[in-house]
Length: 276
Image 1: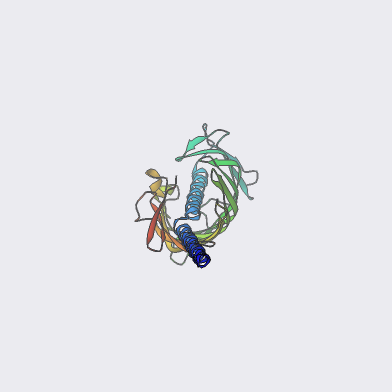
Image 2 (image 1 turned 90 degrees about the horizontal axis):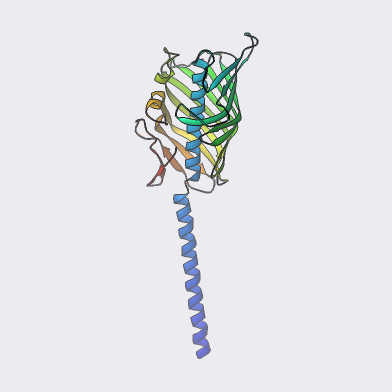
């Protein structure tokens, strides 16, 4: 009788332990699905950095001559009928320019001025850091001319770009974006009045080594005048981001105000994404 009671007691304890562990595991999985925002944060940070680099190139191509102070614009135009090279050199120490700390070089090879319909600008980097994050890889910007809506259209292609941060490497394996300039077409040398509608998709790997895919589901509003008051120029629209092994999250860029308020929406839960 005592043995039977002892066996029953062991069985009950075993069931309780299994139930506790199962519930605990279920809560952990649920928590990870809900709270793992690394891919969302990394992609938004990378996207913001990408647009910052574009701004530097646009600014440099519009600037005339070579500046006496940093950044140093070095134009290598050996043959006017061939491709030219523009080197934006920030020096070896951090230099505050257009709202961000930068050092190293941005190197762009281009065949025409950025606003000409046949322009192609291929950009690489030499020990280039922005806010102490090392940038590597290649990006290609093409001016496709006027589209059927009568607006200038640009395509931006990302080829194996990486950003090395304190948390690890953010790798943009590929990215294809279309930027439609819906305002600013007539003032080419005043780029801060440019407004773009941006669509596209990307594949990446976050700093926690988790692959993710992104698709812009509602075109992003990109308002360059926001640079006058904020470090973020994407003011509205949504993207769908899916990390491997986790549920879909919606990246919401806000209500068309010049701020950096970005949220990741997972189901009915809203999580702020803090970027700098």
